[in-house]
Length: 212
Image 1: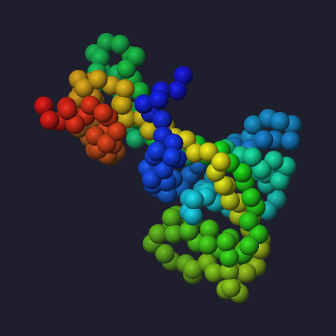
Image 2 (image 1 turned 30 degrees about the horizontal axis):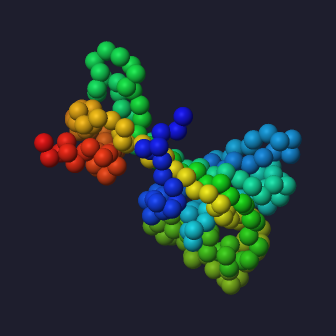
Image 3 (image 1 turned 60 degrees about the horizontal axis):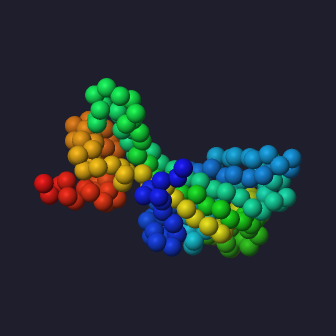
């Protein structure tokens, strides 16, 4: 059963969902194989202009599936912190959990033919994966890039529906939130401080706890 307090949607939470998709660079493409089985492909992507773009070979299993059925699912997720059971219970394993963000897109995949759209998408992907530069800007009119753009496939996913799940203890009571926050602060792993800030943002009781 899906917990409503963790749900995100592109109507009420569009800015937060888009910010997360713009942050991420790795996700999973869900397709349908010719015999009707689900297919899953891990890949790098960029979210720009309201759509997901990825690139790859012009031939192969993934492209064959997309040409046969344009309906796809795409998901990106990030785990921020494992919350051990002993943060809130010295005996039982039940409270152990993880705090994370995930976004799922249901939509349609289109193979991009326009070289300028292909170049723009690949340039956006390069800026995400290689922000330090060190390469010539991808330009559809650059003779060095023209044959390479022809030889690579770029796919755009246009969303019919975007949903997300951002789990940061929204269902926890104030005393449990305080215990988890203290546990994260004392543990001090690389993303624990960021997780505390996200708890402050999403947990409805957190401001009350901080003020006590």
